Length: 229
Image (tube, rainbow, N blue to C red; front, side, top):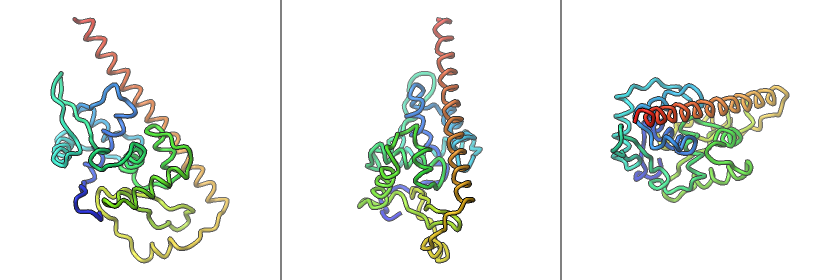
């Protein structure tokens, strides 16, 4: 990253931080998260790229590292310790930017259109241009860039963006040359884009159903405890 004062995170650390930020918005009733809930969120099959199979010990190690970086804090009390993130305060970014960073941490590099769809549950952006504006702000921060626009891939009409919390990616000269080319618009390109948008929408709905199930499970346990008392 362009500023050494900014944290450089491992892949699992970005996943843990992203899950905390995501669940704070999507399932506030169970936030802050327990360690078990955090592991489940990290290993979630939908809305994740790459899909992980992190162990309890690995996630706990990642949490400890994030606590040292002041990005996460542990909240004691109750039946189990819980964890909360402080990404917006530490990185000094607004909630809109945090929604984009979170989506990039959980799903990997994406186009502006994909980001608008995939971050909808965290923040509803008015249009594509508003997403682009926040991305440009994150890329041009005086405190250090947090995102970068990647060179356009061969056959693609749009550039993808990625976060820089895990360091700066290596971009070779061939990729930079490809970025300068204008890709012609074809029927196949349209079909591929439509298919990707549909996949993103399905992933969005799957994640929403998964979060609703967690809320139901939590309420069931709480109601059971009340009856026992």
